[in-house]
Length: 401
Image 1 (cartoon, helix red, strand yellow):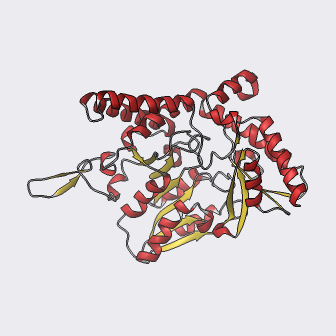
Image 2: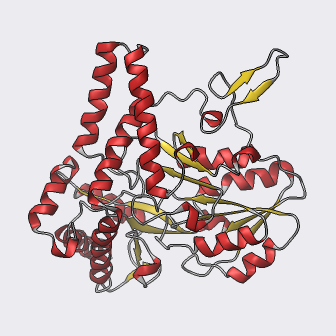
Image 3: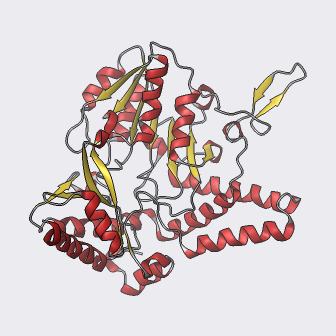
């Protein structure tokens, strides 16, 4: 379905699948997206089946195995990797910590981090912790007002014999800027560095191809732009890079014991999934991904950007409103961040919620030095909702400005 050619009924059919649209204007998918009714049903069906047949019966265990295999294949097609390179987690944070805690670091190592505090804390605190705990050097690259950086400076640091890993977000959580991840990947490969990506704000809203990016590791949640249930995430670990990681945990699923009582890790993905039991999350995410695939990532991108562009255009007509992020739509996602010169972001967010509009307050400058209102609409939002949000911003300004 092409948004520009879609009939109004097509959009309304999608909105019927998301009950929140009947009561609120929900534009906070960068935090947590609502699940479609089909996903809710898949979760209920899974739990009913477990209850009827017994959760540890052979039939249910075979069903769980088939679900996990199916989900890995779907995810493999989504980000262009092999099914066995998909590891299930509970969040992006857990996936990134697999990398930070799994590498055997040396004190002389250097980690290259885009922007430092300008990164989401999930992709900053693990590296900062390593630098404080082990004395590893953390090189925080300088960035411009939109979060972009000088590739030549990245390469200059990468040339250092002690450089070990480059880490950055694919799409910035605070202003939606899309980072040049493929160009950085070329630098990482050229100098033999490991490369880790926080894809929390990209998978499900723009096309992601790990082979084109050239990353070793990539983590994202199922409950943001993929519209899956809470508590389920994905960690991509390149097959050739898996031996460089030692799992955080070890158990019966992740290792075997020899006659000499020597522990030997199993192959990925089991190596990193000991104790994983969020099977209901697997059922839900499988359903949500089928829904996302049915609409299509390219179509979702068009729909999202139509909403985002309209929001930016309308907000730009309000005196005192300051927009954050790149102007070029090719360089940004549907995240729209803004502030006013007269009302604090937290007041705007609170007042909007009182009027049934859900957005978020986020750092626009790292460390809480400057905040912004962040709207993160998805494909179920409409142009009418944009107009309602903008009118509410005007009303709030008139009330407090």
